[in-house]
Every structure is written in C-alpha cells, then in structure tokens.
Length: 377
Ligand SMILES: Cc1ncc(COP(=O)(O)O)c(C=O)c1O
Image 1: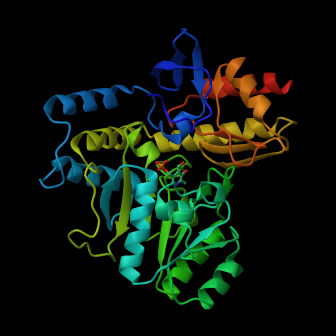
Image 2: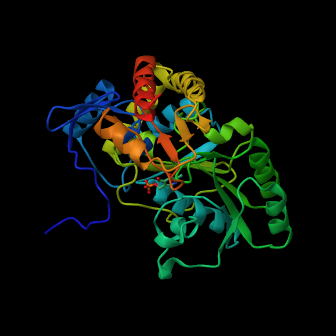
C-alpha cells in the first residue's frame, strides 16, 4: 500500500520539536515560521500540553457523547476567559471544514433559508458545503456544485447590500477576518460592520471563519473583533488544539439547541478537550495574544525597512510579505539554505508567516536576518 499522493512534499522528515524549533532526522535544526500551517499556537511539545495529554490518556482517552464529559464544561469556561465571549454556546467537532459545515447548517436550520454569501478569495475547507463556499473551482467536485452559494467581491459593501436587497433567501454570510490562503488579505472594519448590520436587517447569520485568523493570532482572540462587532457564529480549529485535531463553533445565545440537530462521534472527546484546555490556559497564563501583537508589530516594522518588500499585510502573527514577484525560489532557499519554514499562498508573490504565538524577539530577528540574506540585502 502507498499513500494517496495529493501533497507535493519537501524531502524533509521532522522528528523532534520544541517551541518554534524543529529538527529533522539528520539532526538539522529549523526555525518554524509556518507553525505547521497556523496550527502550532502555544509551541511544539509545550510542557503543559504534553503533561495534560499524557495524564488524560492514562485515565481515559475517549468516550462518546452519550455520557457527560466534564472537560467540555471546563473548556467552555477556559474559552470564555480567552475569547471574552460571554453569551455563546460551544459545539465541538474535529476540523476547520467541519466547523464551517456545522456553522452553515445551523444558520440554515435557524433561518429556514438556503443561500450563503461567500467572498472572492475565500477558503473555508474541503467538505461539501465548506468547499462550495471556497473560491477555488479546482477543488470543487461536480457533486459539490450548488447555486446555494453566491460569491461577491471581498470588501465591497455596496455589492453586499445589493445582493441582500435582491434576494430574500440569504441564510448566512461567511467571512474570514483575514483571508489566509488568498495571501493575507484583511477584511476592512467597515466591511465587517456592514455584514453585521445587513445580517441584522435581513435576518441572516454572520459566520466569522476564525479557523486560521483566530486563536489570538491577529493580536486579538478573533481577528473579526478588530471591527468591534460580534458575529453570530465563530468557527475555530487549527491553533485551538496545537496539533490535536479539534474544531469548534461558538454559537450566540440567539440559537436554541435541539437534540440531534448537530452531532459527531469524536468531537469533544476527553483527549481533545485536554489539548484545547492546555492551549487556552497557556494563552491566558503567558499572555500569548499580547506577544503575538508585539512580535507581529516588530516583524511588520522590520520587514517594511527591506527594499525588496513591496507590501506587508496582516496583523500580529498572520503576515503576508508581498515581493511583487513569484516567491517560490526565495521560500526554497529559506528552507534549504537558512533552515527556516515559511508558508506560500495562492497569490504566488506572497510569503506567509504563521509562527507559534510564543515566538521570541530573538527568533523574529533570526528570521529577518535569514530573509535579508536570501533577498541579497
Ligand atoms: C480559513 C480557513 N477555514 C477553514 C479551513 C479548513 O480547515 P481544516 O483543514 O481543518 O478542515 C482552513 C484551512 O486551511 C482555513 O484556512
């Protein structure tokens, strides 16, 4: 048997990690400015994380949602503390796509309507409805094609208003606070406020996809919070488990739960909760969201001093460096000559930075020096 070959791979096997450092099987050390695609939030092999998970595993790793799992209530409290969302309910699942899938379904159940507004450049996952709301025809299978999703230009309030005015079947608007896959493109505050007010006016649900831009990465827990308005549903994954597969939606108190309307076998199991609890506690105790803001601002300032950099986009530790030309060679040299992991984006001119929230200023300096060397400046 062999692995179904869907990923173009680097010829590197990572065998060990600590904080923002990882080592390959030959003993080479790398700086992880990619966070395993925004997944590593509190750092690799964080001590609290390892001990919480090992202790939980030695007691019980899994039981189904047919019994009480006290760690779920603990997680509600811990997430309330870090998110500052007081009137929300928590549904736990296993991935970002599944979180969005459930968010969209819930919006449709609640409103009785069937259309969703998504935006150009959006990425919401690869399951049926999530992928239909993703702006990439090459990953939408014929079976996923639907006219229930309406794509509008990003950050275009007038187009959104026109769409609502001419369609009375809009169940939800789904939007990333900062588009990640597209190449780090931020939703304007004005746009997010317009989404909020139009959803109120037309009785639709505002879904904030925070799978990549959430978990404190932007310098606030949810990047959508920069606009100062609340969403009806926040979808979460990636960083909230620091590598343990966990997804979640925060659901405002306007929704009433109904037995059987949502469900999952694995979601919210003992081990997953232990992982998410360790993450939330570590974020709170070490003020990692403040660190994301501080180191992010430092990186932005240093990157803007580099002539070859055309634009720096994003906030906190979700940054896009636009070089105005294809960055493939630069990324490869960063990896193989400087041993620094960074990310790409569908915009080929962009280098994506998504490091752990605990990254230090020394590590930021290490990256800047390496980046300047490969740029030849
Ligand atoms: C904004 C956003 N939403 C949803 C997803 C899907 O998450 P997952 O891969 O965990 O299904 C991603 C993944 O990159 C994402 O960036």
